[in-house]
Length: 339
Image (cartoon, rainbow, N blue to C red; front, side, top):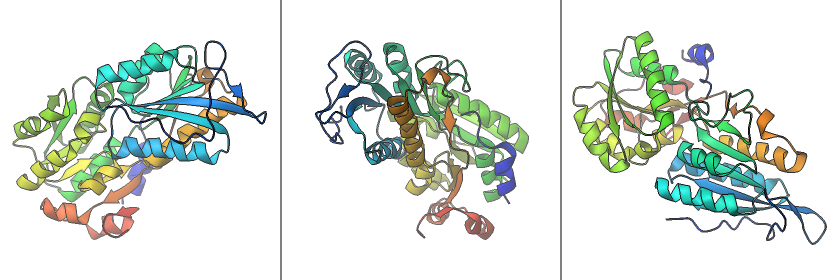
């Protein structure tokens, strides 16, 4: 069924938390600009990584957890300084500024807003990003193949065509799809353009409503009163208010297709989604190559996961008046409520 569609297009290229206690031993860099690694008491090198997360929701938390777990598994002496802007851009700027003056050997930025502020503020140590949809449009890299500076990382570019194709199978009579997204978030604007391209191919129409923060999601959703379905991109403000959109979809008895597997587990109907835990681990592998092998971010291509998995949530579908075809359930990699 959708396996061939998956192969046809693939992925498109691409209040503060306490300091994490993942430190195997304390690591303080003594010397110089750029956070050079220091030597531990046993002669082994020790490293410090600053982690800036834009806000907390399931996908971004999973990316951070995957990164942390892989770093711990490495056996290297690495201290993580984890901070969270809780969705506030000014706080993200402050975190980036503090990391710029700290002696970190590397900085990880989780989500596009944090990545953009880190890239602007930090120029003398490697910066890795994760959960960024389109690094080129976000002005983080010169190209995905050759980043060209001190910034590279992993993209969570999602297969929008395949995701909207699921909608046509769930509701063949659907004609209009509503999308609520943040007008100031570059990765969301990119995904809306991808959705318009996919919709044209599928004979659908996209209807947009924009927000500036998560508190506006309810009003924006209510303005989409005549749509046949809702699509939720990997938009940080909107995903953090996902339950609001789920409630709207249930009230109107229309399907909600999110871009993330975690959002299906929270109450969306179905999607082809990436494992953010794996994405975080993959980013950690890049960090380890930089720290222990001297890899240069300028020549490290942006990476992504190439095999999205099918998530379905039969209970959510029932609550929205939708029946998931048994063939889709049989094909699914993850069936919520049966795992």
